[in-house]
Image (cartoon, rainbow, N blue to C red):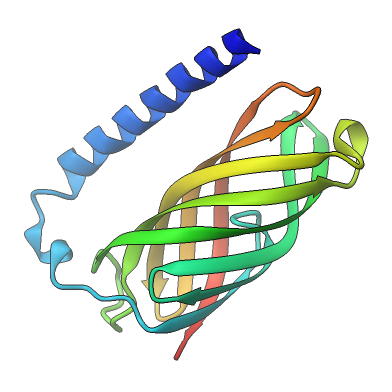
Amino acid sequence: MINTLMNFSIQVRRIYIYSLLLGIVILVPNRGIWSQANFSKEELSFNGFRNPSIGLEYRKNQFSIHGGYYVTNFEENITTKFYKAGGSYWFFPNDFSFDKSGNPSSFYIGASYGSGINLDYKGKDTFMLESGYKWFVWKGLNFRLGIIGLYANEESLKVNPTPSINYSLFF
């Protein structure tokens, strides 16, 4: 288990370093995107793929809760399924989008509880940590790209990308 955690730690550090370097090279020179962006007071998001889950997410200021159905592939052509609920913290809002409707893109970190539905995870409790970036493309349409670490008793730590496409309503 210690070797698994050490390998996970090395992989996560590499991903974060590459992400940070990409952000510095692409985003920092364009100061216009780092304008005074602010979060709306509330947001309801309909999540159509796996980040954070296929379901609903409600955000108030910089904190959100979500619940739904989470699917992932730890192995090619084998889909593992979970029920998932958790919370996220949103930070560093910015105007990096095609639409200047006032809905800022931002970074997030989150923690979730999952209950396995099938295969090796059936009936197992899981703990998931994730982080990434939510990019508003046009009005409420947004994409997320993140990474998740999933842990369950008697299973090795799994790390996967978490892309998604979502639609948000603001109020």
